[in-house]
Length: 346
Image 1: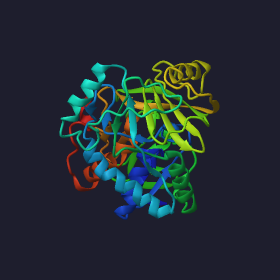
Image 2: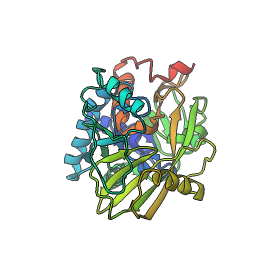
Image 3: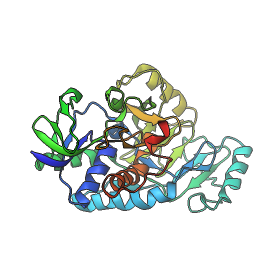
Image 4: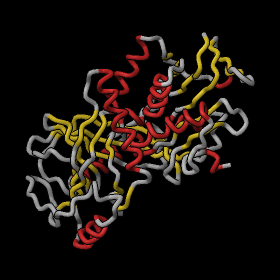
């Protein structure tokens, strides 16, 4: 079997790159062993504002200009809804935070997203004595449904092998690489934090941040917007809400823990007072980079091996942009932006 590309890993990064290949009529084969689940358990929220400091997310508008049509195209392809626009209400903890919010509203980069009106709506069971700041033109992507559907789509076309990629079985040649009967011109590694075990790219400074989330059933919490305070509370419909997330830099397992659940409960009950029942508890490892930029580019020695990784907490926003940049770098020799290129770590 001969293909233009082998893709290792099918989270958001791998999905975005395969879609780029299909758009450009390139052949490919995906290897996916389901060992990494950060894209599946992600909140899937897109938001161009850092809500801790009320500053713009890096390159956010440009990313969204590519990302939103990307997901809308997938909705058409599969005749299913994945994109759910939703406003975000940031709970203020003080007058100082209110003032900082209004100062940030003057930033031209944020004016399309931040309302200049202080929100004082009353909602049963929500503690918000200083009111809310309202974010608009935000939303979420149902990443689990999207990835499930995409894997089914690839399986029907025999474009995916559900097995681990064995690096030792790869034979690197000057032009085409050989792997278990497959010849490929290029190989792209989109393995999430599994990159730590990749002998070609494990020199990159990826950090693993474990995140845990719960889903709660709260019939008396009647809100149709996302609340952001000590954590986020995201409406899913039918009185269910996704609540998250924790950050744990030490635990490298993907198993939910009592410690994580207790942290989520404690933070949730600091601003939500209605009764609720926990109906789900999940965990995953986020592949993050200290400078909060993705890892994109060719191996310094083997130019037909490349990486697309480190998307972090804003993967739904940046994956389509990063995939497009890598494709144009590999096929059209277009230079990668210095902010995302792995050359910054050489």
